[in-house]
Image (tube, rainbow, N blue to C red):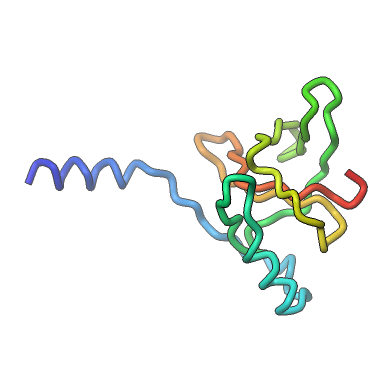
Length: 115
């Protein structure tokens, strides 16, 4: 019984990954939405859905040899394992993230066409 209580408490402490749909991709075709649902990062982890991704202001950081994205006015390094390497059908950079204690946790990053 104690194990069940401890497990329940631990699960309650995990921050939820809440899907957001602000209508930003309402005009995308079903084929495009299916393509996004199939995107995976370098670890093989899915990125979620079109509604969870946000167009990103991104740049290649020459100091760290990696990407950075601007979220809520601040620059954050993109973990290399979250970068999607397949061709970008959007043409612009997209980032999938959630907040953990006010800090964005990047789930996936799709570099833009010019990045």
